[in-house]
Image (cartoon, rainbow, N blue to C red; front, side):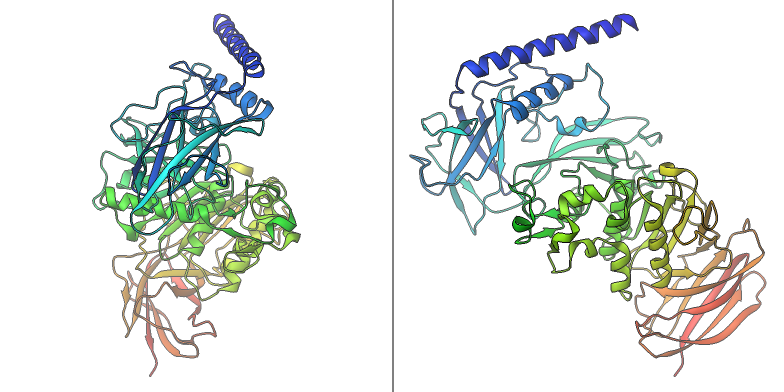
Length: 607
């Protein structure tokens, strides 16, 4: 152990000396122009590469600690070197009068993003980007910028790259930093580029022998607020993958990565495949202001723009891409995550039920402005609440990404089944906002399961029926009815938001389940088998049941319906009555009785 510490100390001294030496050189010599500028266009993206001027990293290998020190020096302390990228549809003889399409700093060929958020070893080496599948990584000292040109039809672009040192630009152009021939281009988003592929026996503690395929896509609008934003993507394909495969979108926590921090690979043993990506900026898997990172951050600057759901659109675009690469089941897409990911997963599912079958979220934020610790994080990307910044549809953004506001605003809109958890003693995430979310789910009659306790930020959500953490036993699909259980007599009491109110630990809809194999959803009738678990604390219960996500059965406002509830095993009719659809077109069977085992519910219109 002592020898290891000594080696680590020696390595860090070497890194420090390297940086110090570069500081002296950089301060003494003005950066020269770039050379060997090249461009290649693929799938809507032009990849520009060049040999950097005074590159801070010319060796074949670079450790993560060394890269971090170089970033601190060359990007934060100075002298600050920036490479400015220009484009024109005519040959570029001068950059005067042209506006750069973008800028990038040194070290752009090194992919430090996917590991900077993870705990790394002192000996870990930073990979360099691969920009074309099957080709080797870029050479050290290579500059990289990926541009998405805009326009219709065939485009022709000329490019030039200049160097600016501490804001002072050298506009000299020559054969090495300005293209003499145009690049043939077209508008598009680009596709992920494979960086590496490996197969492991165990991943995230699950022995499913997945193939781990690491991709990078350089994002641009509408999936980011500017182009040249590298996004790491991990596609996980278990050895026994289903065909077609359900797809899980996994959202990592604060400080996580595509490799970890999102809980389990839910349903990996059932043949699901998974997509996980990096997150930049930390917008809690929602969206951010179109001017974020582009200059002044103020009420005056931001009230002229809007927040756009760049991240949510990006996630679905990856799903669309995956469907072109593998045989996937779009009807069984689900989303899951922990903490930041546990916040983003319900937010994604609630606003896009047409794409998400079900969601699981551990210890997430549901009302951003009520989170005692993380409100500031949302503020960074939405703007201060008092600024009144709008979402792109005109809704105040702090309302739009407030799950409680959204559910109550749109009670008739369908939502997937959502299972989530929160700790009553989780002072960072905040308990009162979790209770408000639970109340909104009940009041607007949504399919859900809620678990709380004294595990703080480690409180884990449970699945219905089997109470597992990683296996969803019910075959939930987008084009399939869901039961919304509310006001169950076996539910616990979470209280009114004070951690000392209500039950210290408990659950809602924990003892209930439903079957999907025999659902009837036709114009003339709706039927479903719903159950009470044998291990429930009582032999029977009462519960309100609202059919949601209806396919063919309709419940228009004011329409009357007859229903029966029957004990399947005993053949006994437990209830027979009528109900009327409410003003939102929701039909609720009030306090129907259920017994342990299976119960058949049948609903028909009253003519």
